[in-house]
Image (cartoon, rainbow, N blue to C red):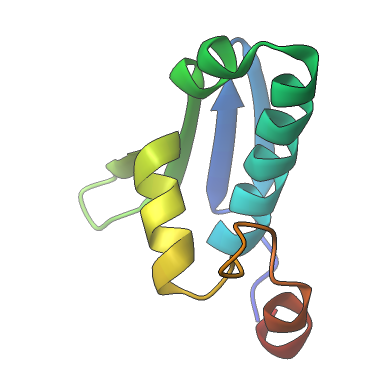
Length: 93
């Protein structure tokens, strides 16, 4: 497996490189969770973007927090209670 960072999590001016979508999403999820605890959820989710790996044209697909949540649900990265599914991370990634 190639461990080069292919996914980028951008929040405000901060950039975090990740090797896969699950890790980018988990990082985003934890940032949003902490922001909710501090009472700043809307500001955080509006300024958060996950960029996918480059395609053959050199373009990246962009995911808002809402679209990243949908993709995470499709990949079983979240439990039915809306928390991170640790078992799935251990099993696949």
